[in-house]
Image (cartoon, rainbow, N blue to C red; front, side):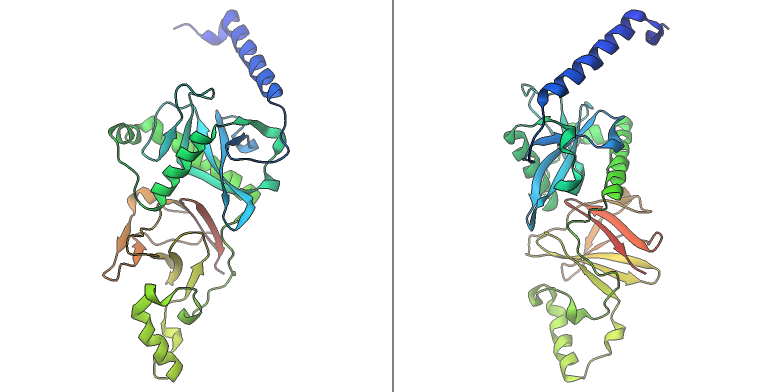
Length: 303
């Protein structure tokens, strides 16, 4: 078989393509502020054909952006969004399962590489909303892609790089947590309607007739923009991830990854009270519990 890398014409073509790419990036110029659809590069993914698209601002802090990985890999999974073929940036696919929160100060404006049209950004926002509410349409081509080993390997590579970026930025913008567990259920910011089964025990606590609070599993309410309430509950040496829906039709968002877990083997299970628990216990690594759900990442000190 011919080695194309020994072909002078092939080498010249590569050099010309690289020169053309540098010229196009130089022609893009710089920007003064970040807008929806702006695409950036991060150093961790310099050796990969991927850019990061600013899709939406955090609702509580407009200086924090959620960015999705976007690349030219041909396979399109269930949670991915492929931009239209006629789009100047095509071929390009945004990966709904691979994203991160970053403060605008952590995004290098000099590494801006173009802007995706607002229609494509709106499609990405819609897909993220479907993922949060468990309403992603299951398509045949999506299932075929996700069964493809090359696709799974590529998503694993992107997810690993995404985690490396998050680790460097140490943004944690969605989560404002105290580094210790509070063993009192009464101090969790959960409305009574979502935990009706505890209302009577709260009243009993006030009258001094209940069991001691220390009998309750140590728990921590996780602050996020989700409609319901996430709770991390200590269970021996491990931790259970629990979700209290914000409404009868609310479903917990997908768990994308967690330290030490193969999350594809787990799932949310609803109890009789419609409270969801992830089937796999989470473990601490070096005194921290780290995991990512759709739209939010958590890195919690537990010791």
